[in-house]
Length: 289
Image (tube, rainbow, N blue to C red):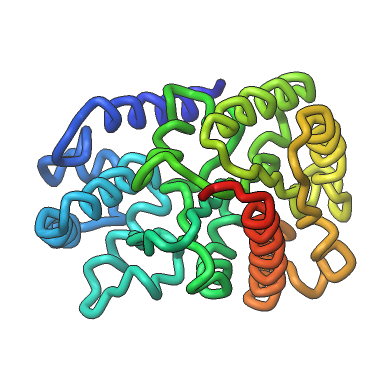
């Protein structure tokens, strides 16, 4: 596990152990600057804290989780969005908005990196009235990050630990990990996810360019490993890679990793259809009642 992954885990462990204000939250200008540089001003941060402190307890806990997990890139973006007049979690395109469950609907959680984050709102809109669609309060990173210091448990315990569908992916951030370690980590994650009693669906990693070999799809060896693990573990696989592979030049941005607005819409539609089918299968089998 890298030093960055260990640090992320330590922060998550602290937030689990503490109540009230986000653990380790900056208390002055110097601490804020040390953590976020010039990305958040003290005025912005204090305005954010004032908003959070006035929220109901469950929404405060969600914001605390975000502060502990989003890191130095995503958290400043979240703060600047959260303090805007008229902010609405239900239409917050970044996907980090608090979700208040309709108790009559099943619960779904999306776990994954920035690709997953990008299609979260599209899936949420597509499944409105069908399911409560949550996402992990993080850009979930690698398998080692998920396994470190109870972070996966933190993600799964947002608003309760009972889930009907867990739709998850780890891949891009594991691209430099030893194949055996990647496979072993996936098995450990599956073991943890199974404790929810949910239907598990692993999304095959979407195409991304090999940094050392432009034009090479670096997801191929990762998908070979994850395909083998999921087959061995009996976990359903959603071919999210195949959903965009033939149109990747059209649907992907200039970084050859992330997707355009159209590409994100294609991913969201595919993911929503997969989750819908899984929920229908659970209902037919009498599960989750």
